[in-house]
Image 1: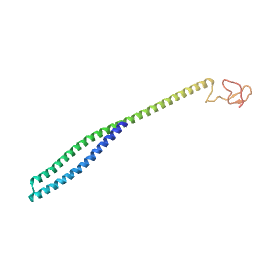
Image 2: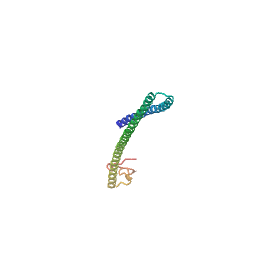
Image 3: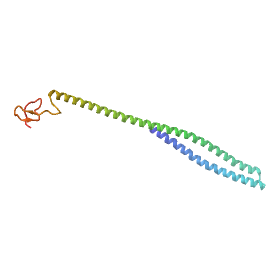
Amino acid sequence: MKAEKKTYKNEKETLLKLQDRRDEIWLRHESARSELGDAKEIFGKELVNGGDIDKLSVSLSHKESALTIIAGGLAELNSQIAAQQGVVSEAEVALAAAETTATMKLTIKDAVSLIKELANAQVGIHKNIQRTSRMQSLRSQHGVRGGQEPPQMCRTAGVRKRSCGLQNRKATLT
């Protein structure tokens, strides 16, 4: 994605430079157009006053040529700007695609992590279910109800106790 960002930035900067250059040439074009209009006005006045047509024509011709050259340059620059706008658009699409890909990779990574956590939780639940099942089986085998041993009379002391122990039947006072 870094390469796409850099490409987009470079192409955008190139476009901005071309647009700035076009603005400069546009100002020169407007100035040349104004000068041509002034030159035509001077040409008309000099012609009325009996000026040399050849000298006036050469001056007017140079101004018209300059305006034509500037207009041609401006048209060429406009076509370069249009092409560069296409390049910038392509770079922008590539950048958006790279960002989408990066987002999808993160989403997939997070999803896999979540799936692992859920699988571990499910394994833990399964182990707890197995333990509970074994505990219930052992309780039913030994006659224990409700998770506690039933109160019994200790054989040795004759005192009622909470637990005498299933494996060790010695009486302990509580």
